[in-house]
Image (cartoon, rainbow, N blue to C red; front, top):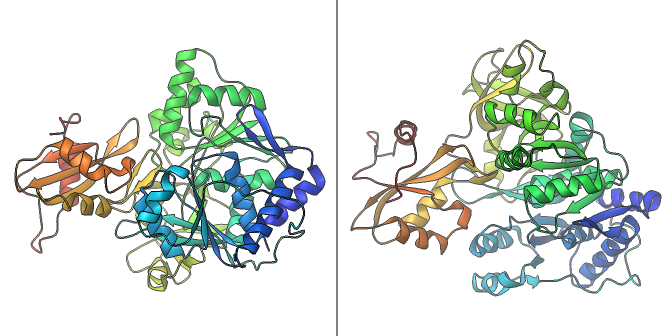
Length: 506
């Protein structure tokens, strides 16, 4: 099926309801959103976009973003939403790898993208959207046709394009409605997190059930703005990385009163420490649910529902709070050993999942797909254990992946950028636990000639996204290695964990 059928049906049933809001103002109704998506689909088709082609979106959150997304789907294309925080070079690689026919991009980035070798058409605004000539019906698509290419960071190499079809996105939406909360017409989803990631996935059930998707006027996350928007729109929910939750909690604590109009804050995308969620419940109130997933099984592996989080009388309440919840109903979760054998409750191993919500595969990377999905099971690379009640506790993630502020950072890319500096002989990048960001990037550097952190910072900003650059530089005489010359990152992490606090970055 084509997901755009959801929009068409909501326009038929609830055409006068607000579909998108910008800050406190209604931006368009469902009838208007469907008309604009249909008109954009016709424009895309006239420009050579055929069913199955890819349409990139390299933009920060704005109301037009959702028109672009639904217009691409209405035309039968697959959307390629790209993290707006990425460096233009990184975005250019994704556009090239996905084979995007065209892309909507920020005007300030357009010239640099062309300079990075982008060959597809780049548009900085929506075209005039005229009702005349609009596609009256969404282009038919199969359940397994690509709908969303989600480029996710791995632990090594370039990002991989996770192929999500209607099947996966539908199952993810049903999981939200079943396990996180129901959605009634007029309920609000506040998009303070990037639409290119989790927040974009969570807008789908709101379109399905004629809720209002609210893009903050700031385009991002501001705690005071979130409180104001929740009070205005009522029954307002949002997806938030743990660092966003902490900032909201600090704001509410300073204000001295709980926010009004909040429904559910779904947190995920990084580690939430037990002390942080306990404080959040105390300060903000019983509004939290947790999900655990990854791009290959988006937002859907486990859930810690509000009812469990708020059940403080349960004898294992704190132990449950420290977990990532139980399996969602549309898939299986299994802990397996290094040869793929299932392990009993309480044993530690790799978290593996299977079900209709698991990705179709990696875009044009069959070998990587075969390595990730073995015997029908997606091998997440995360280490955890299931208790006798089915609650999953994560003990570690893919050993090198860093999650900072909800964003995935893979060390090899940062290391490669550092090694391009002529004064850098060796570099190894790890994550350090941080109360604000979950983790921050730490670079251990062996220099050939005298070097300081400011030089390396400027060097990295020219080559990778700002959020990926190291926050701390440790200049050392040598890196710990094994007999084969491989850097022992476990030892570096142990050294870092023994430090009382971040040392000066030079």
